[in-house]
Image (tube, rainbow, N blue to C red; front, top):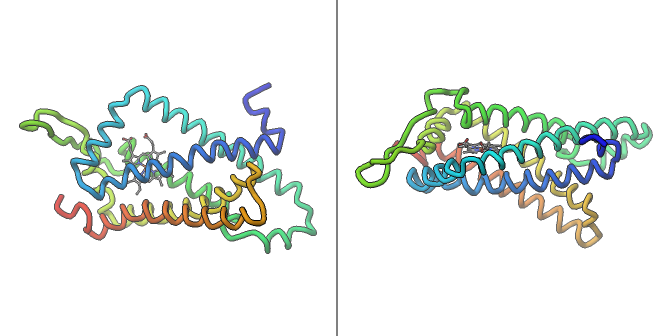
Length: 233
Ligand code: HEM
């Protein structure tokens, strides 16, 4: 039994999609709440970023775990995409298309867009290679400024002052919100949480959740690009 033998079973594949999806959704929400502290100011945001860095090996364990979830999510999505394509009888195709929503039809393309956005995002803020001028700055803090820590606040503010960069983030987040809207619904379906009364509630919940994620993430590049946040830097 290899690691990927679950791919032979559709139901196991859907469970892996839902399980890794829950973990990724939790990360996306936590990452948004953590980053929104940039709206408060340098001291608060840099303390938060410094705390994450100070976790050391634990941070790396979380990163590796998230990376494995992401890879499993992508591989399983591709497998289910081709399975759907090969098993859907031609005569039902029109009906299936009419019943699906815009976000469900674009799931695989949306997923690819989010992946490309993520690669750009990691090159931008984690590796600092997309724009090296914003990376590697330090902030002096503590009594008489005797301590030094990474100036993550400067990195994000200077990064989002660029209009094209902010627009990339805003478009990436719109794809993410569309993806979340549909995937949260299918996650509940896989877990057999559905019914005539429950399904409309789930649909509304996933729409509200996607809207909150979109608003939270868009607020950062938008307010910084417009000079509302970080103007005095
Ligand atoms: C306005 C939006 C965002 C801001 C300000 C932001 C900020 C950051 C920062 C500062 C880092 C670097 C952490 C470090 O290495 O020290 C980071 C890493 C990361 N971001 Fe974002 N991010 C945003 C949107 C997103 C979105 C939408 C996603 C998911 C699709 C995402 C996923 C990640 C991942 C996976 C990492 C790597 C985690 C790590 O290095 O520990 N980010 N983000």
